[in-house]
Image (cartoon, rainbow, N blue to C red):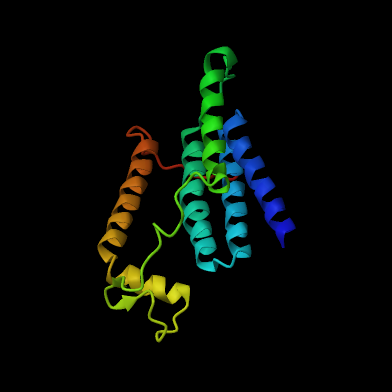
Length: 187
């Protein structure tokens, strides 16, 4: 099973690197979709089925395809980029070092132990207690009950934000002079 994690992780890192290095924005958006799919596959292998489905629905189905649609509708032309490694190299090296350092922190024992950040048994999330074993709910049922009862206002706010993003995309592609009806004629 560890080999599967390594394979999916390798492809996720490969596609993530391709997102930032490819010149064509359409190819970059397609690599972003592949990277999100590999992250969802890793979550499926870890047993977090709901999070895997959320990754596929939200990131792949909504955000990445939305990026691809906007890029294709705006007909973005790619210009050859002259990379100035001398100017941007030290900043990129510092950011890479910071990410690697943060990734290795749990293995170095510099971070405080997890007992400080752990939940106690008396934490109660309204009608659903995390420690109540009498409910026998799956993680999807528990998440759904919390989402539609305790966090419903946040769910509505996210829906409004997505609606505004959709309207923004329509306004970006709308041009007032192109209200002509195009007809297909047989020749």
